[in-house]
Length: 99
Image 1 (cartoon, helix red, strand yellow):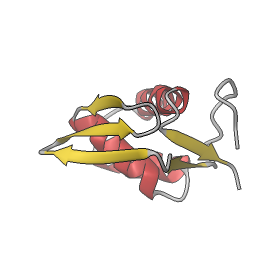
Image 2 (cartoon, rainbow, N blue to C red; image 1 turned 90 degrees about the vertical axis):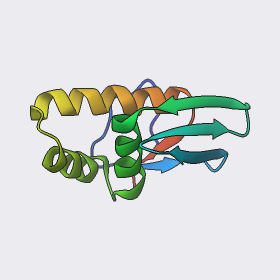
Image 3 (cartoon, rainbow, N blue to C red; image 1 turned 45 degrees about the vertical axis):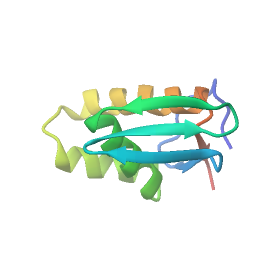
């Protein structure tokens, strides 16, 4: 497992914390961390990123899926995903697992 201070290993995979519940509300969603009782809102893009990250076998595979779905420069998408993954790791909503 990588620490929250290390660079992202795109070969790793994102695993939702077992303490996190997600409820989709239309195109957006709300995450509830049961261990801290904290709520986090995701807009439509954040909801799609969450789904891609937690369902793909690697962060790189999630990147490929999202790159195919969105009209965005690959460098911008990678940077946005990197910030999103780091924010989720800091809040302990996901673990980034290197196998």
